[in-house]
Image (cartoon, rainbow, N blue to C red; front, side):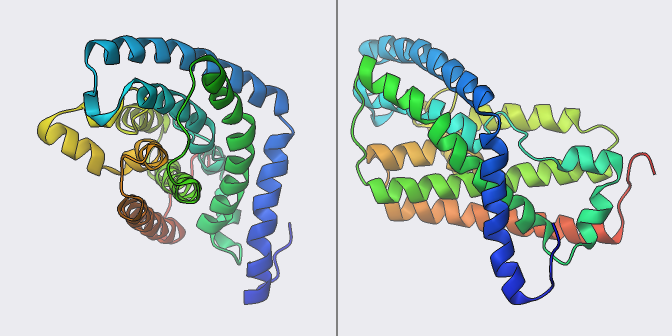
Length: 268
């Protein structure tokens, strides 16, 4: 894609990149549906586990059993758009091949370029991979209605931005390591646990619970789910997500600048 320098060109470029990201992932609709099926099956299994837990401990974490089931299918729906298992960016491979050198000299922000494509991907997967688990959960178990729909969708969008900002940092770190697989595994472990995907973070007591809810990963799943359920103040939750998005995006921008000045490209 040819990029013409200038403010007007940049304004039109990023929406086009978002549309490209949407169309690119729409090509792999069969893989998306397979992922939706897998997320639905595991959602049903998780729901039965949490139902048993909440029957033994009613009101655990401030949720009732219906809230817990709803939380389960919401977080299953977030796996695709939030990329809770990591990945979703081509940067590590482009760094290994040296193609990132071309990306860094484009007259457009590499970070915004990647973010635009990732937003298009997230919109597609939110519908195709996020819809089926939620629908099946509603049919089989019944789920509660969103407490504040507009705030929920905004929270989901901010969660996607936080997720991208974190994954961008992890991906760009490949410039300074010989093998990014260790970073990818560490990122996956941190994200799946501290996002609330494994268990609601509200059930963790004391300082550990406070810490887990204050970390950026909670903005990807726990916070949007709480906004949906009405167990979190929307303004405070959205401010928390916006703060972490700004911090992580700023860190990613600093790393991008460092990569332009001095970067070790594997293979030459």
